Each structure stands twice: as structure tokens, then as C-alpha cells.
Image (cartoon, rainbow, N blue to C red):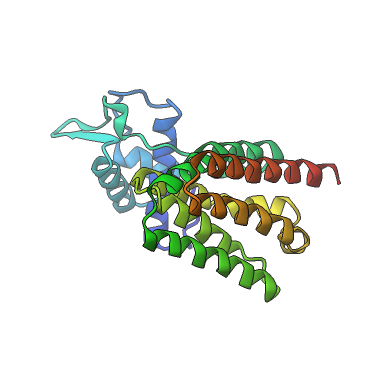
Length: 234
């Protein structure tokens, strides 16, 4: 049951996510008829208006089909089911490492593609993003936003929108990763090493050396995983 203190829009977001999770996890198989508005309203403690808005949203995403006079059904075509990482599944060191390993695979290849495809304007954007990370560190900030912007800018330089989408999706788990490795103080203590890793990636991209860019990005994330493991043992 959701808190009645939340705004209707937030309730709709939460309820939509709950329904999507049930579908993605296979609790409702393709072709299954969803419970009635009344039943869902009672189970989750939301109004029927929220139920209707959530069902409408899932229909627009291709997760649900409605049949006149018969109700709503889980879509037979699974192409509409989005990739998800449940919020409560990233609370452990193991899950944090799993996300880092996923970022390693995605972002190392993104760096290689950026080395091959980046335009002059995109190269300048990458350089500016790297400089922003350095400036943040020098000012005593943790540089999290700037760090994310650098990785996002590299993804944009692949000129492949799917890399951008996936990189932005994974961004939301980075802050938890920082918290689990000791927060701002711990990050500040290793900022020099992190910046060297970033510079190595950017140098390879500017040199148009895809293999070196891929290797540098892989090294960056492998060291990130090592930092996670070290923080766990402390």
C-alpha cells in the first residue's frame, strides 16, 4: 500500500512501477487478464483514477492491451517490457559490483566507438567535461555530477542513441555506488587516481585509438570494482 500523502502524480509513478515489475518478473504472464480496477485499487490502496492512469501509461508503453468489455491484459509481445533494475536490489556490495560490471561492458565499448566516430565538436565537449571534473575536484567538490557528465559526453560521441540511453539509465545507480564506497570524503581521497584514469581514456579518444580507449575505460571500471572490494573489507 502506498502513502496517501504522496501527490497523485507520484502515486501513479509508483503504481505504474509496481505493475511493470510484476509483468517483468513474470508474475503476470503474457495474455493474462489484469485484476479489475476495484481489485487493484483495494490491493494497493490507491484510487481508481490512479489505477486508470497507470494502466493507460502501461498501454502506451506496449506492456498492456485493453479489449473493449473484457478489461486489460498483459501484452503478448514482450518487446515492450523495459529493462529494469529494482531499486531494492542495489543495496548490497554484490549488486553494486554487478552494475559496475555492466557499465564496464557498455562504456568501454562506447569509448572505443567515440574514438572512431567523434566529431571535432564532440571531442571538444569531452575535453570540456574532463576539465570540469578537474575543476570540481580542485574546488573541493566530489565532482559526481561532472563525472557523470563526462561519461555521458563520451556516450554521445558514439553517435548511437542507444548507448546514450543506457548510459543515462545506469547513471541513477552511481550515487549509491559512491555512498557504499565511503561517500564524499573517500571519493576525495582517490580523486587524483580517478582523474588520471579519465585522462587516459580521453587521450586515447583524441588519438583516435579505439583499442586504447576501450582498454583505458575497462581499466577505469576494473579499478572502480577494486575500490568497492577494498571499502567492503574496511
